[in-house]
Image 1 (cartoon, helix red, strand yellow):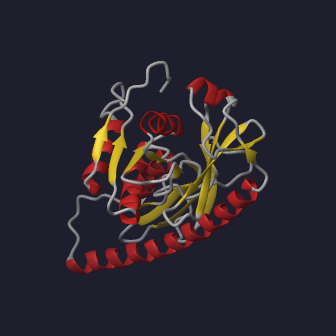
Image 2 (cartoon, one colour):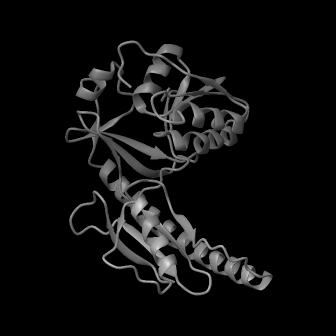
Length: 275
């Protein structure tokens, strides 16, 4: 079992989880995360170490959601052992779904409370001036831009904060997958981009309503949500060209999103606007 425990510890480390020690009792345990505030337990995990070691973990600061885990082994499982393993994974899935739903609900309530303290942002904000774009229904709290993250029904899920120097972060624990921020009113065409500055630039250049997906991995979930909400619209995925990053995730994710919804892909170039 030491090998399985080491595997699980390595998986936690990759996601930035920092438990003082790993409890393998099948229960949920909160823990610190890399980069978290002192005293904050922004991570959680659960682990079973029996004949079929399995578990799950989440870092609420990285916005990537819950990840399930099972130990790797060279031994071939029997049919009965596979059935036990499937049952165990299903039980873990139900536990993590309950944990995730509770955390998302708490984060949505915090997001609503913070929005109530915000005031409308103006295009004079240093980040917007540097990017050369306007403030479209953005909010501001102290010196930070605040962008609501909403699902396709309009329900508030989380918030993104952008500081004057361009540093971005999400509300801890909030749901971002499938959530977006919309600029303009959809008619015949809907564009989709990763960040606010790119989306605002696309909107100003084309006049097409544009949605902010916030990061490349969220392009496909948002594209699917938009397709379900607006089945007749042409959807154009405006990719970030991450040509200097291995695998070019901006273009790769944009192509996957377009394939998923029968959309198109564009790689915009904005002269004088930093990426």
